[in-house]
Image (tube, rainbow, N blue to C red; front, top):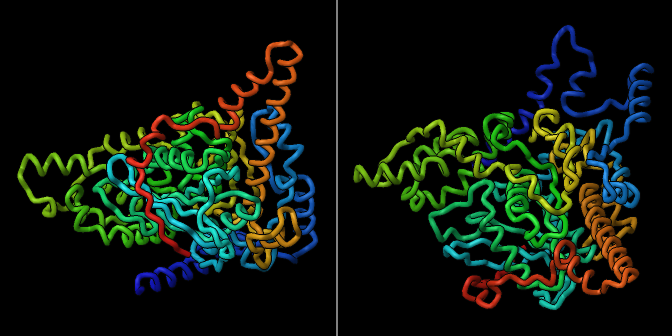
Length: 503
């Protein structure tokens, strides 16, 4: 508790002092401090007002960056939410990129949504968890396997923190008829650690087994996937490795981190990095004794950076085991050993999210803001050439929004999960990025359904049996609900269902 109070005091000090420190001086303009904090001044002289007005009229608040294609034209025509973003400006904390990012990450959210947990036992006897979101008024806690409702698989950040943004996304997904499920990695969010193995940053093996379980449990519903922040590394790795066999119809990334190696090496400012390191140490402290058998925990808990923590967990374990076996030393006697220079680069060769990006076979929408304080500078951290050359990747780039924030002027009281889609209440209490994401899923599905009907009609006109062609196309690329994993006959031997109720 004391650590969290200290972290809060430091965060408040950083918010008030650090962003504007470089704007003090005799040659600085009066409005420079406000710009450093992420605010826009509502008043000012006539010249400044004319500049702001001209920029707002000439440049849209949201830019869609993608390779020209039939799907891109369809999205621009049918996704009205893409151009309906009005960020907060003026004297309000929601206009600050840093404050709204901290708010969506750390502030608790009172939600009527409850979670039903499935603990999945993997092939190596490890455990991951799926938290299925259900409204509090629903009496039936579990959904029938014959349900045709689409499933929305949500991957939180790589540190396992279930943020306010994730809970709000579950609320909106329920209101649109989805079955939201939050994926928790080993040891994350109360998931027991039953093996000495932790999941690497971009290793999709555990997620692959979780997707197979979802397809076994809900074979009649489409599957969509969403990742938040650094959790995009796991989702993009999975889509790249699996390719057309991912069982996912469409995917989305909210404020993703693309160049993860450089981000771990120093792409994050020290106050935010210090807070993330502290949070991860607190989560791993309960497993300190058992982890000492495979890694040097002294070096782990003395690390002061994200890179040092990642190296201590994943880059020292093999070297530590071989050294202990050859010298006969106790596992707990090691200090903070060094890592070979090639081990860090080799680790990211296996875990970089974009290593197999050319194999992605489904549409992926990425929503980013230029003022994101976590990801960093847009030109250096966002691979714009990827979206301009790959027809499967789409980027919504906003001028404001922070990290998973995207607060709007009309954002106010929340709407419950029973709100009707498209209603005024839902629009007022919902997040713009969530609305854009779900509209992207709907438009993408409608586009592929229209393409399928057109192929069937053309086949019938040629007399080639349109029904069979249509079914083959649906099973291959659009409706993967007909594809059942080969291991479904012994699924009970792989997965151990343990249900618990959490809020």
